[in-house]
Amino acid sequence: MCKPKDDLRKDCRLMEFNNLVNRYLKIDPEARRRQLYIRTYAVVPLNEECGLIEWVPNLHGLRLILSKLYKLKGLFVTGREIKAMMPAKTATYEEKLNIFINKFLPRFPPIFMNGLK
Image 1 (cartoon, rainbow, N blue to C red):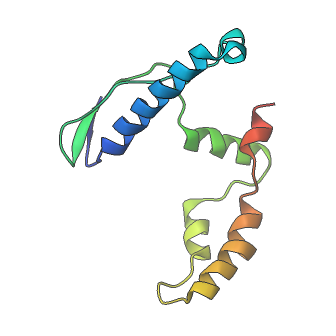
Image 2: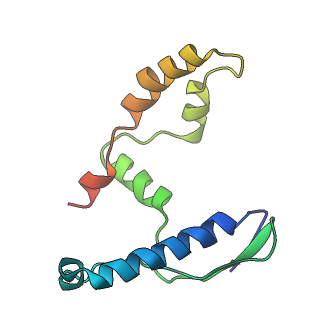
């Protein structure tokens, strides 16, 4: 898949790191017994603005997975609601921290690990 208007160099480095982790998982007896591995895919950055990504069938992005988990718990927030919670650009660090702690964290509790049980 050709992905325009996106710098894929970080994605490429992440896949290289994941391949390294997979090598260590193959060496570890417990990881090998449990058949642990990270699913990797090819990433080819062509320049700073576009690149190619291998299409992986039946792959779901993290954003989609988390959105579904939040919806199941009745915690889904729309983009419009998030924008409404955002502090002003001129807000101080303390104001931004207060909004993050008192508005964002309660709306987005840790949920990913609960969805995997």
